[in-house]
Length: 328
Image (cartoon, rainbow, N blue to C red):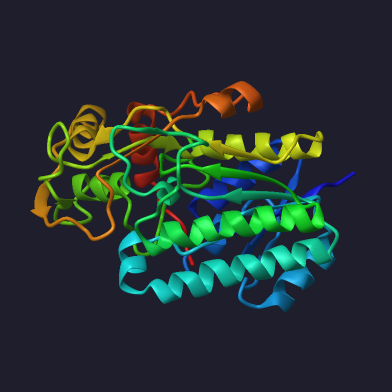
């Protein structure tokens, strides 16, 4: 029996990798994407529905056609700086889009929902390994919008028996080791691809935003998770629900963070090239340190973040950087 899974944002970076892993696990991923930041060429593992979460009719039509066993929700605006400058955009698109999706999901009789949240819901909590019990105090509209969606998911769970798993994580990095899909944002804002573009001469230099943070070398610290490990966790979460598991929240991380300067040093070791850098000012909304634990996911889901080392993440991203990339 064919089991479809609707993957919102399925033409984007994480969503496309999720579609690959879902297909390998025996599901048929249906990528639902408006292609505003995603790539049609990244949809290689199942059908594409070009639709918009702001249009309820698009969602209803996709659910009626494919009758998925679950919805996996990745689609969102996710630029912290932009969310600080235009918070209304993030509340309007992220929250209203998720509300449309949740209402359509329960109306279609679908009872399994996997939500891609973020450690940005925790705000700036230095010296703390973030876990499921850590208080959530977002400091930007992106994190606040995701926290609101988490609450909506729980509300729909209580009112409509929508069974759900919520994942919180921060910096996703790397690429499919087989090179079928990879990271290609427009615009690109993530540290590792920006750094590798500078190494390859595709941009003049990498800008390091702030060197006066209260950290070991003055640059902010983040936890990095390999994209393939991340989407493996989402498939495990889906199976958890299909096997009758209870509603859960899981944090996904390594429990240790790296500073921007440390990431640059690892890049030199992997690529054997220097990274040209320029120093810029701090960006509004950036936390000093965000590090996420994953003991619950490892214990209860059987998650194994084996590729989440800087060497593997930078190495796989460097391999992808040498490929032609996605066409429109």
